[in-house]
Length: 281
Image 1 (spheres, rainbow, N blue to C red):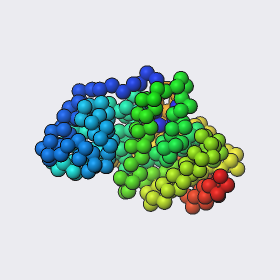
Image 2 (image 1 turned 45 degrees about the horizontal axis):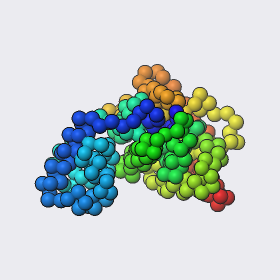
Image 3 (image 1 turned 180 degrees about the horizontal axis):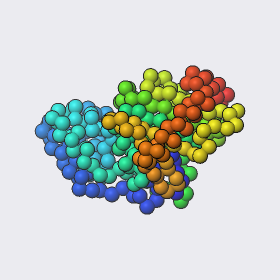
Image 4 (image 1 turned 135 degrees about the vertical axis):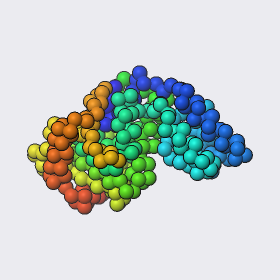
């Protein structure tokens, strides 16, 4: 399995239907019928494809957060659809070890990410994510790849759906110089990152190759602040992930991340570097 910096499920993590997914599908179907809408009409109103709606109602596909919110709004479901979504237990495209962090991530009031291997999932363009998944070893089946790609793209709604949550990203310049997928993919990736960098709640910093030493030499790290203002850390390997809750260890990670922020280019300078990279492609 190839790690992808966001706990994507690889071989051996085929999505399976659970009772909670089936129950959620029945809830959506009941409210859709109450609204006298066909699946096609409902799909059109919420901006999703008919196959996606059908799969969710049949309990075969995990709904994205945006689907839940749109369905709740369009069907005027009294909070029932949103409530049912909280009890879903399957996350296709996400490895088991990452699901707890993904849940915490969706509720966090602050998120920090340092990455030296690949562009963080929340900043990946679709073409770049597909290139990452295509390189998985052993190879993914088509269905697995699409599940992972859907999960990756769905998670990115966090950046825009939660404008009051600050997202900080620090990534190594070498990641972009790798040119994964070729010039066209890298060009699209840089455009995608520049778009994200325009959001007021996103701070993007590049650690240049000119910086010989820095505080992130022990590897990638993630930190988040919970709604009750506790800080948690996360570290991921090739086939495992570790949620770090010990205050002492989290404190060390916070100190390292603070140092990294002072050592990397500023947000404005990082955007300038990305624009120069874009012009050279």
